[in-house]
Length: 169
Image (cartoon, rainbow, N blue to C red; front, top):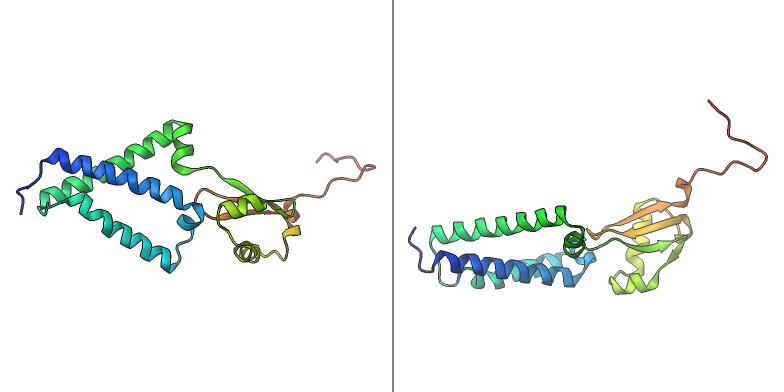
């Protein structure tokens, strides 16, 4: 139960390799998939975890080995979080950057297609924000978590007329 069949350093190395491989794989599939798990996406994630589990454990079935693997994965994740916090470049690689997808009522098609977002998904986002059309949107940003933030045109206060000067309180 406690006796390991593999050396401890091999388990740590396996965990680090698998962690970074899965990280790169998830970055490649894009923001949309990470932010909005459909049932199919959830099944895919479960299958990926099952597929990489053999690469993690090899023929190691001891409790000690499982604890080393779990601790290594948590440590690597904490280390990546720390590096992301300390260094802007690392944060950009790990988190990605927000992308403007709607500006001044116009959908930026290049961003929409490169991120794999359908027109109907954008329209659903408008409805979620209580808006009727893209012309009601000043700015729409695809955030790093896959969600779309909307700044409606109505959020801008009206400008004072030319003959009106701002009144002090």
